[in-house]
Length: 321
Ligand code: BTN
Image (tube, rainbow, N blue to C red; front, side, top):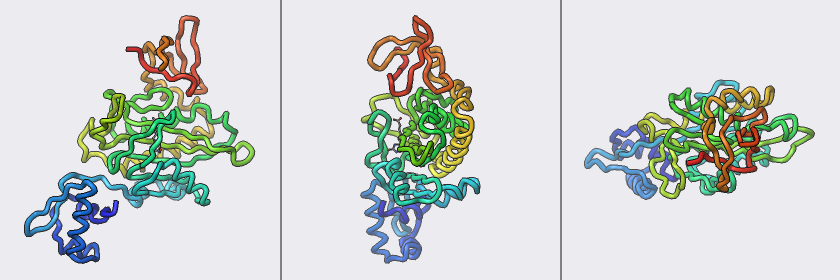
C-alpha cells in the first residue's frame, strides 16, 4: 500500500489540511494531492472538504509492528522476530523465508493481505487487503513428529480462548482445526510440518487466519463469519488481536511441549461443534455420532459397531443435514 503513511495520518477520521499533511509527510501540497488520488485508487474513501482539507470516510484498521510489540508481555516481545508486511504471497511461506535467512528468535509474520494465502487440503484462503488477520509463526518442538499429535487442536484452543478473552461469545471448534461462530466459519489454522532439524527436533509453521472486518465474500462456498459481522467494525483492532494471539500461541506451545495434547483435551471438548451430532463423511457415507477427541486428538465417532477414532486428514467430517 503506497499511501499507507497518508492513510495512517487520516485514520482518526478528522479533516486534515493539505498544508499540515504536506508538512507531516515532508512533501509539497501537489504531492499530497497525488497521494490522495493514489489512495482513492487503492480503494480508500477520502472526502475533499472544500477549503479545509481531506477526511477519511471509511474507518481503517492499519497494522502496526510497534503497536503489536508494545502490547506483548516483555518475555514474548524479546523472544520473537516480528515482520509486518504490506503484502505477501503467504505468511507461512514468509516465515520459511525468514528461517532460511537465519532469523534470530521465533519468526512471526503478519500481512495486510496475501496474494496466495492457503488453507488446509490445498484450498486457497481468501485474504483481502486490510480486512482480516493473517499471522504465521515458526515453532520448534522436541520429541520427533509423534510429539506433535494434537498440536493443531491445542492451537485451536489457544485461538478460541484468546477470542473469548477479547469478548467474542459463542466460539466453537470444528475438528480438526476450524474456528466457528454460530453463523459460520470465523477462521482456520494451517499447521505445516517442516523436516527434522536435528535428532528429535522438529519445526512446524503455524498459520492462523481470522476474519476480522470482512463483510463480503462472494466466492466462499460455505457459511462464513467475521468479528465485525457480530459486533461493530470500530471495536476490532487487528493489532490488538495479533498481540493477544502471539502471546497465547507462544504460551500454549510451551504448555504443549511439556504436557502434549492431554492438557488441552478438556477445553477442546468444551467447544466441540460435533459432539452429539450425527456426522457424515465428506464423501457422503454415514459415519455416526460425534463423541469428542481422544488423547492424540483423533475424532471419536460412535458408529454401529462401536467407537471409531478418525485421524485428521483421513476423512473429513461434517454434520448431517
Ligand atoms: C483452513 O481453515 O483451511 C486454514 C486456513 C489458514 C489460513 C492462514 S492465513 C495465515 C497463514 N498463511 C496462509 O497462507 N495460510 C494461513
